[in-house]
Image 1 (tube, helix red, strand yellow):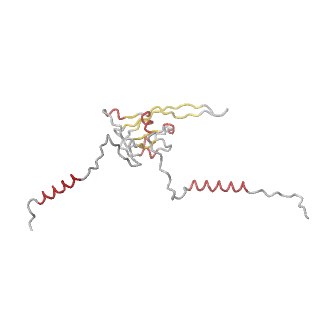
Image 2 (tube, rainbow, N blue to C red):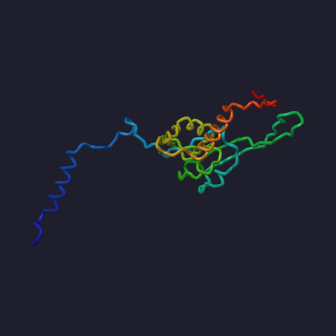
Image 3 (spheres, helix red, strand yellow):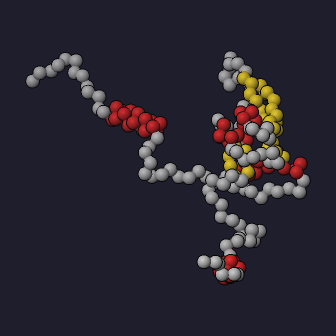
Length: 189
């Protein structure tokens, strides 16, 4: 049986009419802020106090978009007769977001929790050279990082916490036990 001429056009117009009568789901972005998922990858925030200038993030970055400069500083001895120590001091920490592909490797390899994902996504610039953000801007975004989610109440306790709790309970039990008093003369009645 041959299709009726114009049936395809009628089906297409029916779809168009159905779509026209439905309410739109488009959010008007500047007026209405979007509801972002909790683990949104927006921009990288720097918690500068935790950074030890180990350079792991810059070495592991596949795009080479992290720039770190530092210098060594001598710290005087903490106790008399102790030796002086040297430590790295952060001079520059910058991320070029025009090169960054938001893979998160830098955040994963940071052993001192100095880098975090922030849900901020409104950092567009008119010039591509302005997308290299220095540590001051990265520090500002650190305060927009959401707190980590609470632990699942039904989850089992981590081994480290369970071991520490058991050790503390044993110490408390040992201190609570009365010490038996020894009678050196062994009195008899």
